[in-house]
Image (tube, rainbow, N blue to C red):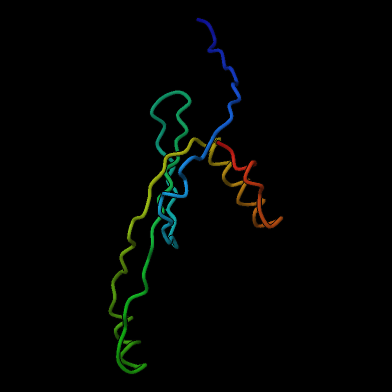
Length: 111
């Protein structure tokens, strides 16, 4: 049995029309690693959502009481993306660079 051959091909990428995609507010994140479906399976699902704070009216005491009676607050899903663990690590590296250095150059954002 022969081993699979891995080749690397570098291509220039263009984010043409990226500005036409609406920017959505996100303040909730969910990361799920998929169960291995076979050799080499390494998918991660990243779900992004927005949780609007509940509207609580009345006096401070009435608001506190209403907040205690909430069982859960619904997260509005915004997007779900599938990433390989390799691409997830690249995303984490870019985010770390942003936090440490003030940001990656757009050319460093990967494709």
